[in-house]
Each structure stands twice: as structure tokens, then as C-alpha cells.
Length: 125
Image (cartoon, rainbow, N blue to C red; front, side):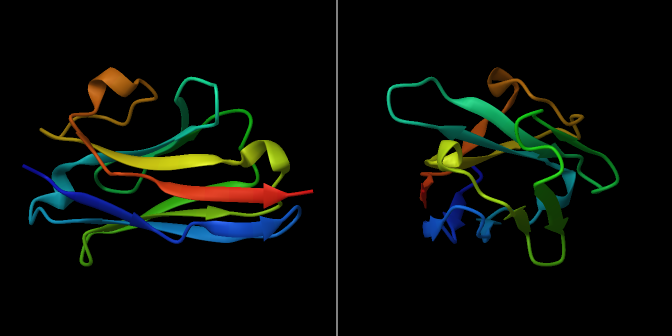
């Protein structure tokens, strides 16, 4: 059972930056494709970004492309989401997720077996 713990959320003004971290308990972290998803109040959870197990491939939702960067450090069992030029519409609870078994990166929630508890990001206008 992989445990994922997100951190780094908070309150920031529009145009500002935050970096989210997601630490994994599993020593085989390097075999997991990782994703970030978010859920705004009253809305369904949506895909934000994903990264392959090696870190060599990434994929972004159109809404964050050019502003957010996903990365990982397999030596630290951690995946990051650098968020720049934040907008009020980025306000949401952000979740990291792990897809095991050397799976490829994916934007689909059902392909991720393990989820963190989420961290709140609030962007004020």
C-alpha cells in the first residue's frame, strides 16, 4: 500500500507561485507514474499534470500548460508541481496520485490506484 502525502499548499495572490510536493512511502516509487489532479468547490475532480516513472515524459491539461511544471526526484520518493502565474480559477484542493506496475502516464483518474489526502491552494484576485 503506497501512502502519499501532499504539502506546499496555501494562500497566494494572483500572479504568484507555489510549489506542491508529494512524498511517497513506497521504496518502489520509481516504478510509478504520478499525476496531479484538482477539485474546485462544486466541481468534479480534474486532471492537471502527469509524469512517467522515469520522469522523461510529462503531460499537462491545457488550462495549466506553460504555467505549471511537474517533476520528480526518485531518490527522494517525491513528485513536485511548480505552479506559476496562478489565477483565481486555479483555486482547488490538489491531489497527487500514483499508478503502479510500470504503467505509462495517464490523464485518467481511474488508472491511478493510490491517492493522497489533498492540499488546499487558494488564489486571491
